[in-house]
Image 1 (spheres, rainbow, N blue to C red):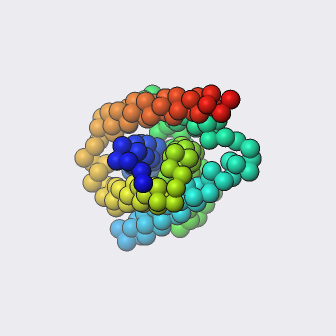
Image 2: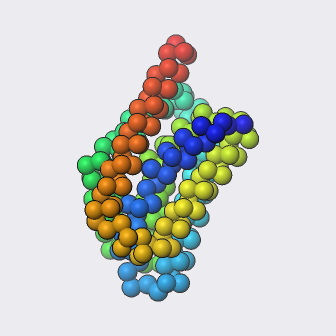
Length: 210
């Protein structure tokens, strides 16, 4: 069974990579012109699809790495570096610009009713950072009980994501431009520290194997 520290670390890592406050203004832009009930359907559908995607990587991601001959240590190093880059983008506000460009492309190419799948569920909610973090966390929680706990953590994060989307208009007004900028930078610094820890753990694991 995973310790409380492990579960808190897993929850924090996923919460920062999923970044509900950063998705709120994009969600509002994607669903402009929709009724409240339509927005609710999009929010619910995208959250459920994102959970399925992350749950699949939590359960089978390590097995896929094994088939490819990639050790968990090596993936921790690579995943930590990827998460560090995402943290860098968050601190310097580059990630938000990239997300907004993704949403703009989707509006022109996909029908409005399909935005729950693309770009909301993938790649905005269950993006490369969240997928990498999920596989890394699953590698440190190998037993079936620990994996079940990880699924609960993922579900908890996506329930928060769903709640943020359901109150998106109020949350956006409450935070404002300044509030979103401060929160995004703060989460970026936390993610950078978590990413560095993943790299350190990966180096230790790789040295132990060698």
